Image (spheres, rainbow, N blue to C red):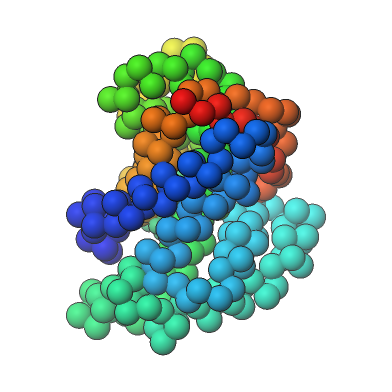
Length: 298
Ligand code: HEM
């Protein structure tokens, strides 16, 4: 499956993604304050990701409510989850139907997963579940990843000026925003055997909650961890998890984020905060609900 979500496969679509990001930023820069969550952080991934998977066009507004319920479901059975489930009943059915082979476009990654199943690389049931996991894991994560990056540049304006002066730091800036923002705050693991950690034994079969966001701001690992510093060597962060289940879509996420930066560098001289940021509570994600900003044109 890593072959499907590969850099080579992504390089083919990058020129179209860049053109879409350029047009979007062109339409937003210099228009005065706006909420960057719907207008930018949701608009851009939704303009490229569903097409990459080969999703049917009608009903794509279901993707975000579905992802909200999915990421709430990784946490406790609380009121947040109950409310998200109520809001997303139709969305869940729409997503399940959209992952069927006969609903997918012939040229998307979804169909490529079914073709891999035809070759015996996985079962057809697994193919369907994998396509659904793209939709579960690939929308709200990138939406909030992009929102968090914009929030970081608005909160640390010197870093945007530094990036404009040194655009070669773009990849580092993407990694630093993944470290600093840690969109996926926590993730579960199940121990496959007894494990000793810091003098305690965690028994086999235990559910462990990993605090990825805390690790990404651990002062024993990072100097001045709360500072967003695009010159920092941020590789080694755990924003995409780690080990064999590390994020399958990390190249997609990086390329979407880079496309937004590349579009802004020549067009935006300042990313100015235009009001308080509002967070959206979620049992797993560090989610941004409203992000008022003003993109000052270059
Ligand atoms: C900024 C955006 C993203 C972040 C922060 C993120 C983060 C993560 C994290 C923390 C995990 C768990 C890793 C672990 O258990 O060690 C994960 C898994 C996963 N992600 Fe992402 N992700 C992002 C975007 C995407 C995208 C765009 C896709 C789809 C193309 C995707 C697909 C997946 C899948 C399928 C898994 C499960 C992998 C497995 O269990 O083997 N993610 N992601």
